[in-house]
Image 1 (cartoon, rainbow, N blue to C red):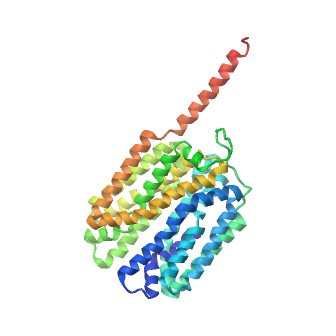
Image 2: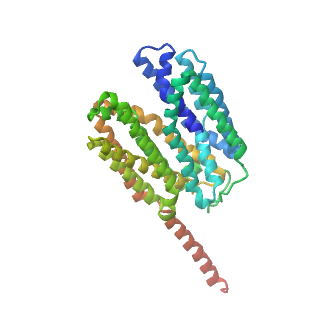
Image 3: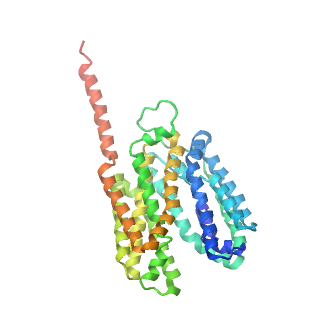
Length: 402
């Protein structure tokens, strides 16, 4: 509900800024960019801290805190009269956000350990589908009730999500088991970063999010550049973005099944390679159907790789540090989300094709690095089993020795 509610109005923020008295197109772009960027920027800084508080006081109450603030702040946006009011409210949203990483941690702990990837994939599927349908619903609302009332409807979406979390989530229904590590003292951020493959997964999540968000500023321009008439550019671009969103949701959804048969290393590397193929197709595409195929490859590759990366990191985080761990991963994701549009826009000013080539290079690099450096969980578990068996054998052989 929250992910859908958020995208009801945010795509139409430039229009709302214009209604607040800003008439210059450049000024509208500046105010919109600042308002859209300040929330993920502050959330990236504070997500680990909110996660730590969730580990200490309970994740449910932290999610409720965040959603209550969104109900109030989105409702307040319906009554603003100046562009700077929007910026201030968006900054406050960034200070009180954090329900995204906490919801992933809640899903990870609520599921049995062998079903953690499926639980994480379900949450990320909702994160994908919400932005896919939200703008469509928001467009209808803006047309019939106006943008101001659309903010109030968004607040109602968050209120509904708050009610569902309060009524249906049980903090006591935790199935996560301790990992096979010896914990000494409380888990700190430094401990979290030292977990096996964790830093690599942070890098992977950043790269995947960076590429995923790079298409927003340039894809409509590319669609027009390859020959689509100006009047049809919004429709064709919308179709391509929707394809990426829905195939990304498919990748999230089926990743759990893939991880039952293949290692995280293989799924992440294959997903990144698939997305690289899609980026390559976009650089040479000149027809609608080729661009659709490229969008499918990008969406499903990034979706599967993202869920596999979160699952691989979640598998080594002790239950008592899930909030902090997933908060750090979310910070990496949000940094990619916030920086990508600026860099893609700057590169697109020189050549849009360069953006797709950079995306291709990033995805190919991720695939190679993961394949070569990520420690395989099956090999790790086998080594642990051999060490355990060796210890038992040594104890048996030395039992009767003086």
